[in-house]
Image (cartoon, rainbow, N blue to C red; front, side):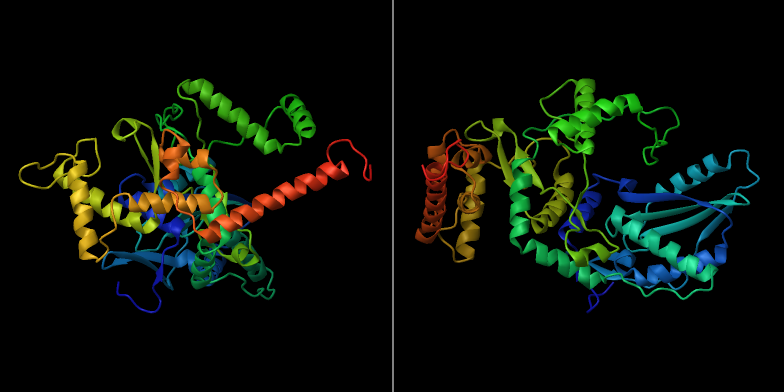
Length: 450
């Protein structure tokens, strides 16, 4: 594809998925599936027309991903000949099971990033029972987006079947989605979310445990819903009421304890939970990918650092694209595990870069850019200073940076007079509020006016 006015950048979440797929860390598990039972008769041609109409309205879901000059873009593609695959399984001995197997096979068939990144199929299991299956790549649509498209298809098909007028479309465009994400990334909300997720990332990496699979069971097909025993839910509901905790949080904690007891290694359990950022009104009409992604980090093992303490090194999505290209290039030098950056010189080919070599490379870049004071520690100074400006306490910054003491972290923090004045003002406000509360007896059992 060529670059034109219709080409738009990928959002941060989309770029994360693209990077994971390009580096071989994921496959068709990024492809979502929706399997819906429809009671009554369905006219396949009318449903196909309704799906085509809705997909023309849902521009973000029709995005295709392409690269130009080392950069990644997306563009909405028109599909005038969209087809609904139809399977008549009404004469099968196990029609629903067969429909599920076919749908699972469709979901496990890779969708090309060049598009289309969606697929629809209709199954007739009885004369008065049908199943609609929709599959879409997560890089262009999330679960809520699938629900929006599904509800719209149902509304358009119902209008056709009843000869009623079709309600106006309400979906936002692909440009709206990109603008919404760019506005979020430039907001204080993004900085607060980034700080939260950075603080709450797993402190250490561990084995990737997966529960054992039954014979013939597919990774990509969910198990049948299992109702929870009311006798079990009753004490759960009582505890949630006493502790004022949502039942979903309580059950999630129980699942974490179960997984921890099963693997019995490490001090943490990490569960993959989707995070939706559909908090603004305009984001709730986007049939696209607006799911949150935990910030990408690289955890440097403690034995490779100067202080023998673990360090967390955050990096941006654009840096992730460069890293993806380097990982592919690194595989041509050596496929051995170990340090990330390898020498390509004839004398030390394939050997890890030394600190001396790295310092010389950075020095050469600094001189070429006419920034003679730029060094290997410059980005570390900038990062820790930004964390201090965001309100992180010194102990948290030292732990994040892998420093043995808070005094060591202080050498990397450079706050201006304006920054220090703002911090002093906020501290004085807290002290003043504390004094007022103390004098008025708030929270101390005192009586106002004594």
